[in-house]
Image 1 (cartoon, helix red, strand yellow):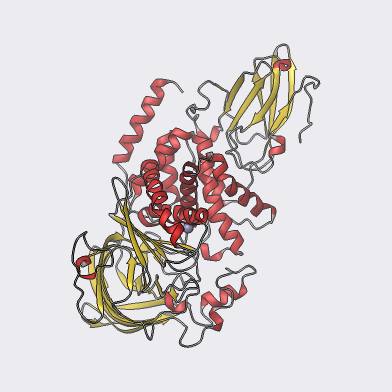
Image 2 (tube, rainbow, N blue to C red):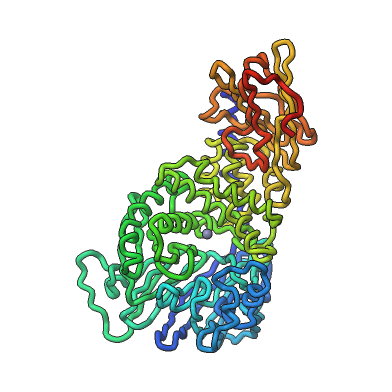
Length: 620
Ligand SMILES: [Zn+2]
């Protein structure tokens, strides 16, 4: 592409950006005051929710999610777990074995809309409310609720008494309004996977035994009355007698999570240019040494993420020992704490990277888990590559391998389905995490590194706080690259078609070499090829796919490139004409940067040693 054309593409990108047509979205303001009784493990509280209907629709019903109800024998989550062939090892049949004082529940004691009692029904984890008065477009309603919950024994993500001894992991712990958008309601019975919710402001007051330390979403408003490391340096904290009330505020987030334990150590560090990062862990032989080293890694990780993928917009973030494995929430994460250093840095990297994709972009994780888990995995792998000095391809290699293994095991299903409905846990995991990662690293191959990273920042800055969907992402990438990419998105998420390119034959004729390539898989791609000559020089050859309606810009690694005509996707073969003698050639390789998820790389490279002559159909 010549200079003038490149200039034109830049202009068009930025003029399009200002004309972005965003969808309407709902809004909620929660004010909650809750009391946690650490003897009975029950929460009683009130919730005032101002709900803004910004849709063009008149709503006669609303839905809340009551996640704790999932932790009861016979729940959807229990039945699903006991019927999957490979259930999550943390759940298995554990819910079916919970006793009455170990289960979770959320009981609604009263619910009023604008001062009047509403009618509602509870089915599993869904509370369906028939409104007293419909909520008209562009108007609001105020819901006032009294509820009582029992915190379940920790089975998955939330609960009390985790296996590492954390008293309370309070996630998915309050009645939460389901999201309503241009696709309708997203009120799905909780079976243990992904979440989605409304952009909200939270004002949360939590009262409990004063010996407990809380870490969570948002900012502690009454830090100087609470202390425990939240107070300004040098402040003399004087706690009132009796139970202690912690008052948190969080603005423009999709959830509010917290954890409490009497043994938590609280440490802080500030990333240059923000945010302030808080660490909460239970000191001990299996934690202290590694958690003391974690802050430095975390600062470097945030710096990399801010620079590479867009700036983290909140003032603080907390890494909290709690729950199981690792789970992301807005402005905080809950992770198992007793880990090797590598594992602790790895989980920190992944969970905090979710701040960009789950917390700030907040795509619907239930419908598009690959846009959250996959993108978070991708970003953290890039950051860890820098922290541990490995190459990008090496850092993503495990994701490619999981994807190939998924195919070999016959467990691949289309990514476009709801997260809860995959037939196997293995299929869901490899699809969401590994295929989401490969989707991005391979996109670098399709549009080039420079467009890709510019696109990732443009995507974040354009769609933050707006719940982007797959097409929103690919449109951004089309704008920054000047290429058509709908085919790529569609093949990757809607089908299970495979990529497999091969070198079919190489024929020399009167000083020209004819290289015939064959597309063996059904998934079409542009082709990068490198020819290595016996004199040690290399020639980079680029064959765009006609569906792209253009060529990627030359990458830094291939400043000199031979551009050939586009490969029409309907054609199974393509013959490249190289203006060199076949006898000069040492080897020819498709995709030398290993970014294309080609399922059989054995037919990607041909070496023409001195003793070998050009041949026909050796590599099929
Ligand atoms: Zn994750």
